[in-house]
Image 1 (tube, one colour):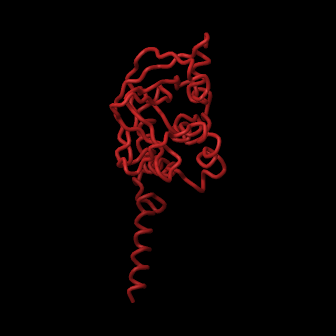
Image 2: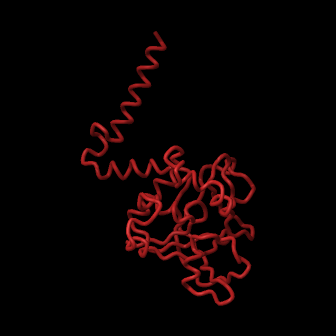
Image 3: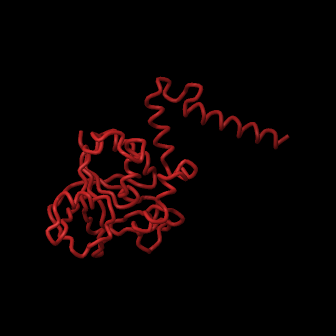
Length: 220
């Protein structure tokens, strides 16, 4: 089954999206790259916020005339959505929304629009024209408005100053949610369901046992 999703935060950056759905910041093969159809889009009646003490944003429905610009990605598989759900975690809930595709002004071609899709959405935004309406899935924040700032999240700032922590050399140290996806994929492919010697469940049990042992020693 093919899915369509609207991304408004870190997943607008191709390396981050690719890392989540394919396990690497670049498409494994040219065929993988051709699977996704990406276009700029806009979501009405929602507002984007910075999440306190985090690099990523959140959106909430609003009655105000607020809009959120992002990317519409078509061609996602069931497996891709499964990985994205794990990556987003319990702070978000996947919901259906209706977005408008954005077409570039001044004769911009469809190919140029698609290239803009997950590129910098900060250029020539005033020239964008709203086009057809498309139903998509997106991730709505459900972890409480008290954890959000009123300030708008800046995608250009994320790419310029923070993205290297997510997909660059520092990514292995900061994790940023990728490990949960990797562990889930490994457990799915593990015939023991994570219960083998090096399985994710066994590792969790080992850590729990070590913690219990430490507590007992401190009690003595």
